[in-house]
Image (cartoon, rainbow, N blue to C red; front, side, top):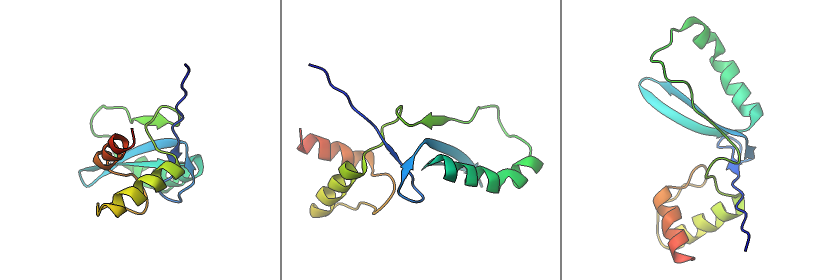
Length: 111
């Protein structure tokens, strides 16, 4: 039996399909955000004047995950998980990533 699993990134800014996870840090806090090519370019372009004048800290190369190699959920599955979690009184955000513990509980309850 063959099985194919497709993972789709959802743009954390506008809810559309994302193409990559962009990592960045400011004030000692590291962030990751899933973005479409257009929104990733906007982020990089808006930071360009600052990065052009800044010095690099550390030697780690930035991590970029491309769509297809991630564990993102489809919109429909995300909506199902959010509805399931809310019905059980769990705290789940309306947008963005769903906590892995909630996803794991959902998967356990549905398999």
